[in-house]
Image (cartoon, rainbow, N blue to C red; front, top):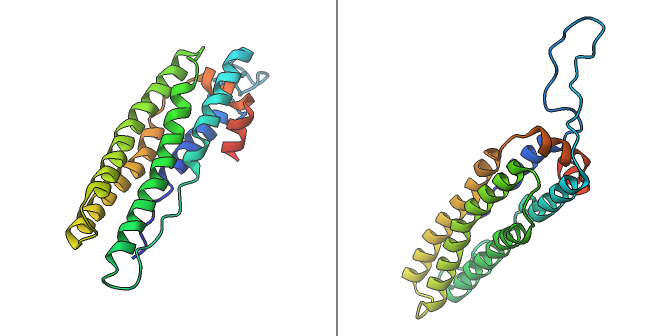
Length: 196
């Protein structure tokens, strides 16, 4: 059976940022008369907000590209090779999550309060997944040998890690909506790239 992660985290993030990054206004103004436009004007934001949003989108770009995890070996009983595949997969997942986590924690405070909330919420969602991966890798590394029990535990840990990674998609859907963030994202090159 192919053990892979879904792109839920990345897709959810792209959907959220695409919504934020849409060059269209976040809301339409109610029509007041036939002679007025039905579209609201974009919220003006400063260059600092656009630069911050560009950094935010750049920090999470890696979440849109989940790693391609390897299958365990087809040869039954090749426990060392299976352990190596598990370890390699944990390493890929660690890089996937750690990159976004590290980039976000290095990001300067947002000039828009909703941006700081979005950053904190995403970092808070990534932290337990990051910890889970590190714990699973540590358990696999300290196991005395590639036994069936070690690999069963490794497989259970992999399932738990994958569930955490896939849950990141719903975390990104909960990022705060803000006309200022949407306007800044609409002008930020990294956000436009994510929105595709």
